[in-house]
Image 1 (tube, rainbow, N blue to C red):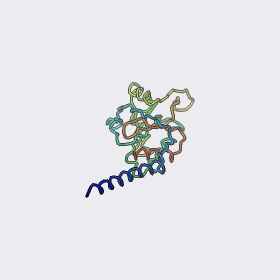
Image 2 (cartoon, one colour):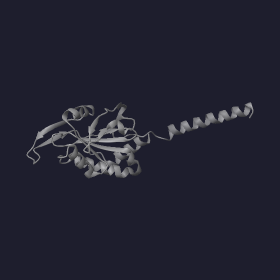
Image 3 (cartoon, rainbow, N blue to C red):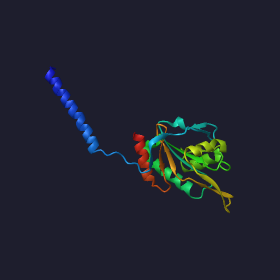
Length: 201
């Protein structure tokens, strides 16, 4: 290959790369997240809690997965069962991608929600869901790190009291970043689309 041919090839390559760049900017739109995007993302607080089988759950062990978390309690009359039901629909809709999603349900009511109770409650919605509890000392830093509000409310219900608590789902991406939150009532389809896009990053 002589000098002229090399020069022509270089020009073709440059124009090819430029054409791909222009196409990607003009015709391929960036994905717009439907949840509340944390930008720039924050490094997620790494925590560990003991599961009901005595094994430790460590958030950082789930890198490479998207972690979908919710903070609630097993005596919740409405928000928590509705949210976990939505999480089940999300996992089903993701099909093969679901193997790269970890769903975690963490209590805001450790006085009543033992690790066994949380695990049984979470897995009643889906066998792969993880239910976690711990002591107040263990849980408080986790609640603080993910901006979880909780307050005990007196009630005439059989359970004795109710918990007022945050109702936003939280997403930690596969790089360990606190990346998204979803408000209560957001459709399972919209959440599934956001998570699917995170998995493709």
